[in-house]
Length: 605
Image 1 (cartoon, helix red, strand yellow):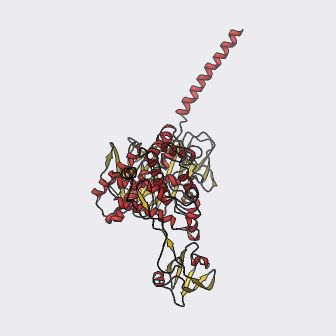
Image 2 (cartoon, one colour):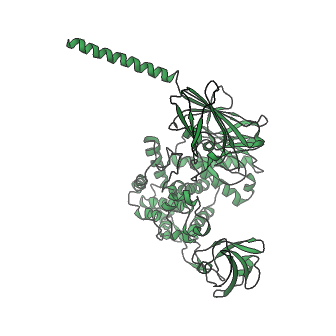
Image 3 (cartoon, helix red, strand yellow):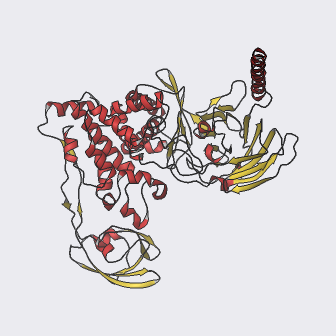
């Protein structure tokens, strides 16, 4: 009897295994899930994308389709869903299926038991910007998070996309996506995160001569790039990529594409591409060329720092809400730091130009009151509300930008590590550690504590003071840290000549409209704020502020008539004297051998 029971149990286990295998077979064949998109743009003059997709292998009676509310790399909410029009869903037989807009960014479709879902919708485009979709007679730029709906809870689903562009356009499609062999203009993404991280440019574009770094191809494709020396530009860009990639010592992609969407502003980094506003005309001056090279170096280095070397909050992403982190002073700020070093080490920037770049970064926040109110970590966390460069209006006086303070903290951290290790280690070693430990081995981002421990592990000592500078508003000892690299820095306060009122203004009609009032300035103390109209100064209609204050002296009384809060007001302001610091960097006259060694290696000499 015992034998029969055991045999029966074993038989049940056998048949259970057969059933499991059959279910697995059917789930991977008959009911295999797939999503295939088609994006049509045959009538680009309408500024509307025609989007359709087929979802096969449905297993539920209700499917929620969602549009992200932001795109990685641009830490602001984007109302992408408002541009979606003409949504329609049907089954495999063409039967229209009911749906409802359950949230501003969610479409809930009742599938009726259908195993295949077909969806069509349109996306209307507006301004040309790296975080927005744009379409006109000359080009199509796609910011994928604002074009492709995803099924809720299925971000890991594989996706294919076929593009149907205007027939007169260049057949070259610029994107970081891999093409699908045998299918023209069709690309594949292993999941929606990769899809959303791969912008697309199609149109009347131009491709510059590709170059290779370590055998890996790099492309530059752009629209309306203007007149510039294309040969020299590509030679220089290759040098920048070589220097930036040497910091980590590994290139993790199969190909990389610089996507130049046209003149304008802004750039967004991606895993193996970057979308940038670009005008070659800008490079016809020395300062313009340096600005463009720094910009491209910044966006390129981001494929390491923020895409792979990243705070743990920045991926996997929640596309329904803000993804906040206190570490943008590292992710963005250190990328500014390395943009300067990459361009300098590529031989495209002089020592003096490098030092002036850091001088300017320090001035940008130290000479403004925001550094007394907001730390670098607060600036990082509050960027979703403040904007990437801080608040505007009167509130600008209480914010800083992590783009300014971050690179300075990066330089100080680098100098401290070099000093403590007798120039055997540097911030480069920290970046490599984070890359290898968290991106390659653990395949995740790092926590704030892990970042600090990594820095201190490389330095071999506590770096408490620098991390306090990042998380507080305490005064920074610049001479100490720049001195490690044999550099002197002028932190003395200098009185500016002439009387100081403390406002910026722009002409509007017959009056001047105040655009900004410096915190604690005479104007601020007198109650003046932005958007107030200046009607008269000393009984005369104002024209330009520079002319008005040219010969004014400290202590002079100024009568002003302004329009404020719906009333004409007369006020009297006593001009003060403004103090400023220039933070000029220079070489220490009697640097030690270690200081000289640190400086030379930092400069790439």
